[in-house]
Amino acid sequence: MKNKVQLITYVDRLTGSGIAELTDLLNQQFSDLFSGVHLLPFYYPIDGSDAGFDPIDHTQVDSRLGNWQDIKQLGRSHELMADLIVNHMSAQSKEFQDVLTHGKQSTYWELFLTKDKVFPDGLTNELADKIYRPRPGSCFTTFEFANKETAEFWTTFTDTQIDIDVMSDKGQEYLSRILNTFAANNIKMIRLDAAGYAIKKAGTRCFMLDETFDFIDQLSKKANALGIETLVEIHSYYQTQIEIAKRVDQVYDFALPPLILHSLFTKDVSALVKWLTISPRNCITVLDTHDGIGIIDVGPMEGKAGLLTNGEIDNLVETIHFNSVNESKKATGAAASNVDLYQVNCTYYDALAQNDYDYLLARAIQFFAPGTPQVYYAGLMGEKNDMTLLEKTNVGRDINRPYLTPSDIDESLEKSFVKAMIELINIRNTCNAFNGNFNVKGEESMLTMSWDNAHSSAVLVIDLTDRTSSIEIKEASRTYSISLQSLLY
Image: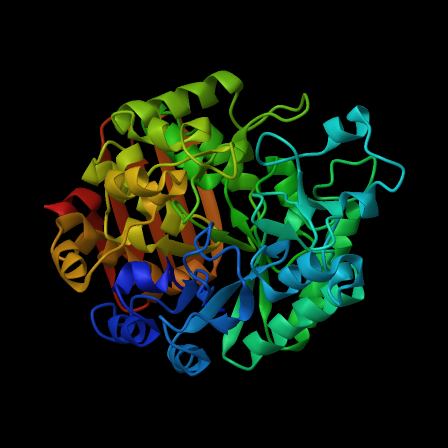
């Protein structure tokens, strides 16, 4: 994948239509902005219980968006990333429906993971307490078959998302079929969704085990053999993330978004500088995504110090709630239907109290951080919390999953800070320095991030106390400086 800015988007929520319309948008209004696109689930159906992350058929494009030929066409102009939903599929899938009809006699029985497969001698309270889970309550859901017998199936996220036995022959066949479909249709990178939960083993946390690394490695090799790179999506302790990065193609830098917020809120860059000094270089950077703003990635874990203390994290979360006028509170944790409790659901723009300058500072830091930047469609357009959609669905993450129309896009492209962000994207895409060596320095409220590559350099200097900032670019043929304030006004 090219080291240039990429877009993250749902097809229908950005275009109001399908894949062909997205292709037109990327080649017209967004021309030359994004080298690649992470297409959030476009499988059948896009409107399940988890916005496409619970596919009934992972190899079928939802016909409301188009077909595989449309995907292939888009892939001719942009490098495409798609989600390989490793851990589960919909309870409405033909495979699981066959299990409900035929029970253990089903052809697909071994495809799904039951409690008995992992705990043949029974699940004690002690064993249950060890299991790491992203939501409160049981990891299992009881289903009744046509013959009235029952079984408890692993349902890590919701009771409509049935966990796959990825180590079974059927599980391996299922994943290989998806990979082959992707390879045939110009998908160049896959995001391994929920891969950390894929392997379950009695007596463990059933999360990010040594066996999980082995599974990810094997799956990545299969993908690589088909010309597909892999990105692992895991929220975890920051030092664990560093170790994970050594064993995979790419990881997300999930520590960056909360650390930038913390720096802007407190005018103290020390935690951010510490992280940027040691963070993985083979990473994808984000500020916002279709999920919430992660918190676990910077906090303490099991007695080990985090990048932020518990007190600093409490302040971070409460400041987000305050800045968003408590809208984020209505979408986070038990306040709404959520499949995780370690994220704050809020647009990044609202987390910064809709302050255009602070938002531009955050984007500048992201674009100068090591890794390949991705920009979420709602963040690109500077969208505010979608309280109407949240009230309609009561799905916490929908607060940052708006449905836009072509007129919404045209209006947003006239916003001064959207124009400023597009200018930052162009700098990130065209300056050769970003393919070189990175350096970061910081003292209290002063942050300096720089890149050097042969005859090119790029330097970002921010003073959070004085609220000043500048970018200096040196290329072989010219040198120029800009202030972020000047981009806005």
